[in-house]
Amino acid sequence: MNLSELAAFLKTRRARARPADVGLPVGPRRRVPGLRREEVAQLASLSADYYTELERGRGAQPSAQTLAALARALRLEGDERDYLFHLAGRPVPAAHGPTAHVQPAMLAMLDRLATTPAMIITDLHETLAQNDPAAALIGRHPMRTGPQASYVYRWFTDPAARTLYPKDEHPHHSRVFVSDLRAVAARRGRDAHVLRLVATLRRRSAEFASLWDDHTVALRRADHKRLVHPTLGIIEVDCHSLFSEDGRQRLLWFTAPAGSRGAAQLELLSVIGTQDMTRETLDTTEGGPGLNAAAPTG
Image 1 (cartoon, helix red, strand yellow):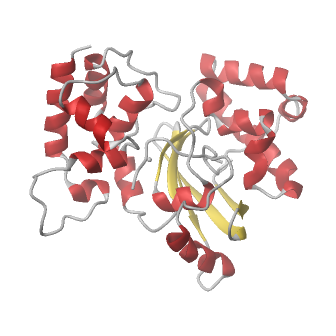
Image 2 (cartoon, rainbow, N blue to C red):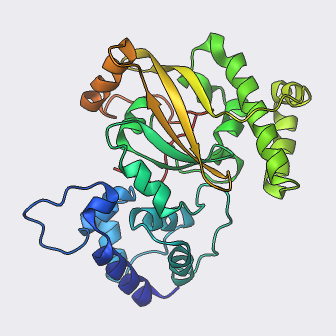
């Protein structure tokens, strides 16, 4: 680990980043050309003190999750992200999992959905990034590694993961998750990561095993959802998906028809925020960090 080089690299990348690129107002009183330290910390879901220590060449070795969050907050390109990991003495992560690199162009699209609940997930429903309206709608995703980073895995192994949806709709979502995963497995071929996930779920969940053996295949491209919010109750939304070119990442966003009860509830979320979120946060509400590097998918 090269603390001094890591500190210098973070400083230069912070100075290069423009507030508008990450969805922040420029403002007339801004005295630095790029982002403030506190802004980078907020975007990466870190404490300002911890980030400041990193820029001073001090502190503990940052985790892979922290590095991934910083890469997203600073809008690093792929080679820059890998360099950041090398400086921190961490292995460059694979193309899957919660530390996967998100293309800056996709993050830029997420920035432009500032008032719309939206997030970026992998094709295995591992949350990569999420905006504040999405956190208010479905909760923030906990920092997890391994199979538990996948909301599909948690759906079939942890009853608490299902509280986002009404109980009578659980069978429908189970079928959709499995058919989507089958389509992903077919596209990826003999991908070891997918094979391990499927094998583990077959052992852990009789429901999953039965649905998997049914061989239903269908990517989830759009869906109408009824979400259970701890304060506002049932919120009906439409979930839309935009796929990356290789299909491994998805931008999800949630809307409701103008004038509907769901639209009014989404407006209320901007007031309520995340202060009343009490249920366990999920990883993409499909089927789920301004930007926080780790968030739900459902």
